[in-house]
Amino acid sequence: QVQLVESGGGLVQAGGSLRLSCVASGRTFSSYTLGWFRQAPGKEREFVAAIRWSAGTTSYTDSVKGRFTISRDNAKNTVYLQMSSLKPEDTAIYYCAATSRGVFIKTPGRYEYWGQGTQVTVSS
Image 1 (spheres, rainbow, N blue to C red):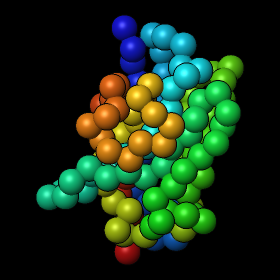
Image 2: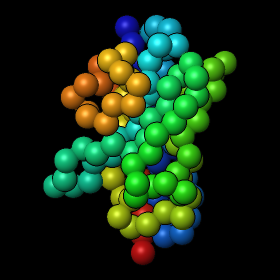
Image 3: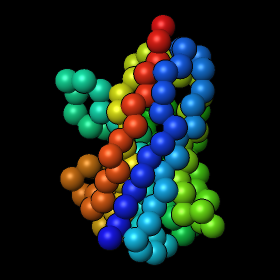
Image 4: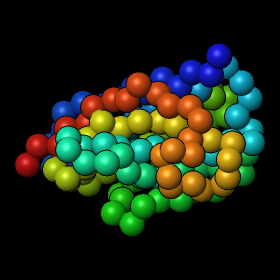
């Protein structure tokens, strides 16, 4: 049974930093892409960043480039999202997801597994 468990969300002031973690279990993820998505109230879920588990190659949405960094620790089966220079518009529930259906897929519907989400709130 695949499980993705996020943690690390919270309340932070604009300009601050947070690190989200996603612990993956239940299978080998070497052929998977792990992604981070976010969903703000009243908005659709949107792609934030993704990492190819085996190669470590990454992809980001334009609005977070230079501020967010996705990484993984193979030994801990964990994917991280380091978020810096946070803005109020980054406020959302952040979800970890996994897919075997391609390298850097940005469509939520093509991800097979999802975590429960962690709330990130950035105050101005």
